[in-house]
Amino acid sequence: MSIYIKVGSVTNAQRAKSVLQRNAIKSYMQRLENPAPGDGCGYVLSVEDRNGNAVEILQRNGIKILGVERL
Image (cartoon, rainbow, N blue to C red; front, side, top):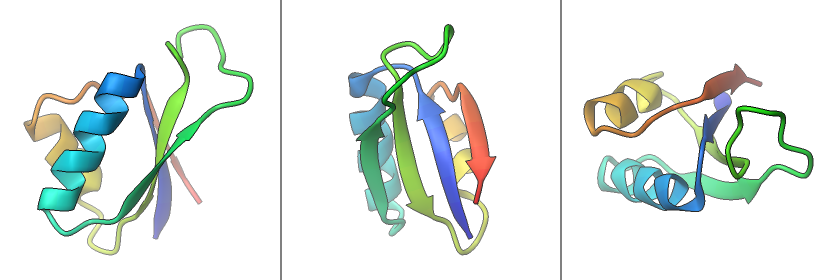
């Protein structure tokens, strides 16, 4: 299952990517073209989450998630 995970800043996106990588989950960092108010700097991680636990892993590691969209 592919998901987009919104994070507020490039720093959080980098931290999230690193956390997922340590847990053998591939992710790609992208910048939103037109971030909505409340999206911060507008960064998302595109994640192929086969086990459905990427969001839980990020939350356990203190990454603030602004939203999740399942594709």
